[in-house]
Length: 160
View 1 (cartoon, rainbow, N blue to C red):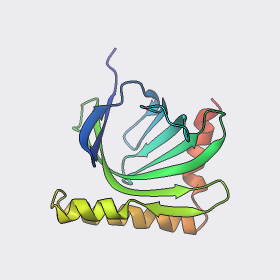
View 2 (tube, helix red, strand yellow):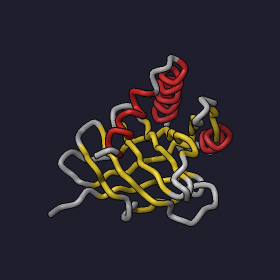
View 3 (cartoon, rainbow, N blue to C red):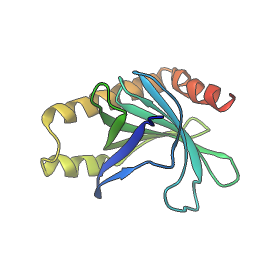
View 4 (tube, rainbow, N blue to C red):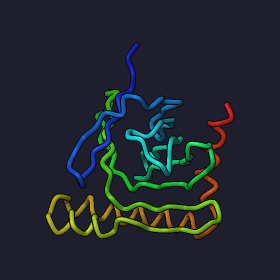
């Protein structure tokens, strides 16, 4: 049986890694749901469940610590590279991240890294514009109280 292959491309550091240990829970043309353990041991987080919203340019992850406590919802702004008919997906991490903590506090991080990659001209203007639009759309969803539309998908998948 053919299996979906997932890859994460980072710009800082510049690397592509296959997410070979991620377990695909479901996949269609708009979303891929996975569960995973951290690639390298960490004290703050241990595992998570992620939803890649392919048409929105975001990945929303419910992130847990080693005691299965929710640490935060971690939202990556991504660009998905996928050829129709292929089972290979490359998710380019566009560096802008939004964290939503259990108490509702929202934090935007890594804008400096995004600026560095822009300065180095490692992203096309169209990708930069799409990253900013995706980040803005995500923040509008969060600020309007509709983030639950994303989190519910992950929580429903956990209860299967």
